[in-house]
Length: 332
Length: 169
Image 1: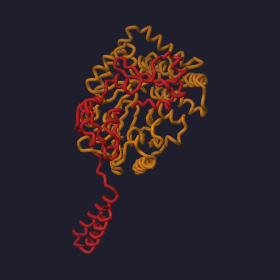
Image 2: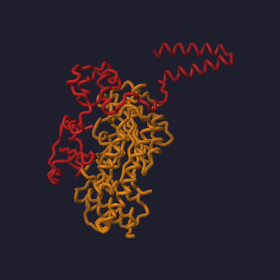
Image 3: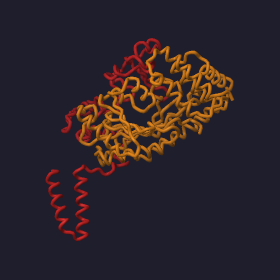
Image 4: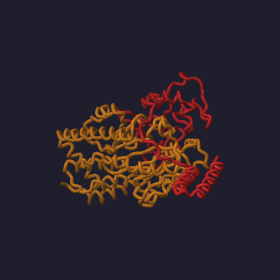
């Protein structure tokens, strides 16, 4: 495990036959859609929890978005939108987003096949209880034709400091774009992703089977991964500089009085790179990844149980960072 | 999908507190990235781009939809009343039946960005409405009764099936 693939996600877009798509649904039918999906998931072995956006505090919604459990469209779209999640939050079924149903499974690490298997089971469960909008020629019918067919988007969140720092990401992206892949920043945010996190996903959803989509995303991910490993080797040509950046990042994270969200993402990325090179020692990189989520603004405030000014947040983030990173990561 | 009217509801990516009033989108080395910012953070970080409308977004990506002038006739979906003009403008359809109603327009956009018009993946598990499920169950029980040569029971089930069929119309 080299930690290059941070997480794997598969989502399936579905709609209920005989209902207009969410933007054109009235309140009564929006609630019916939610009820139908929730009832279908009620037959699952594990207990699903329903979270209605309208009942959610602003902070809770933002915190779930930061963790990729719900999307921004769900949070700020239809007022009858809801998310139905399993106990581990790995499966999230979003209702009344762009489509009636967005089934998503997100797993840590490079586990696209497993994520598909899990969400496919959820899909079977829903489709045996709810009649889905499906056409034998066009497949699953979605609000936007860019998702029609399989309705499937398989994506891998990749940690790519080597390709970013050697400025070779562009060439790598061009190479995989021939396989109908797209590469974008973690939330699409920041012109340079501060944590060197990028999403690789399929673009095409029609005229391609689910297995073929998984195959092409996995092949692209593997190719990018190989390039990333080569780029990390190339970075060592200037070892003093890279080692200095890593140790400075570690110094900031364990000693600074304030750390902004962006700085935290950037410095943690360098620390992770240091662990990869063996310049720093950390036995639990997954915990380090989890910490990145916990230190995002809304999650930070939710955990503290209070809203804070940006300054207060930066102080709090620095405290958590010093404590957690100080005990998780050691000088090698 | 981007909608300028949604901007007011979205919070700033930078401070996570104020509503976003600015949107920036850049494609650098093939990586597309976007930011939603409030007035304060925009000034703080010196971003100068303002909210683009859908037209300029399409200009950045290349409009995935055929030009309105290519197909001037407006079609209306008989099920939901949505029009093909609205589809060309937004990229979204109103209901599943719109695919049939605007078949030509939808097919040309599918050819453009999916490079395909035929689904080859999974199909849904067989779904039956409660009435259909009950009818199928009665059918199964009638066959069992006939196999056991219990024609009285088979007759009773048959009557029930007739009622269900009449009622389910």
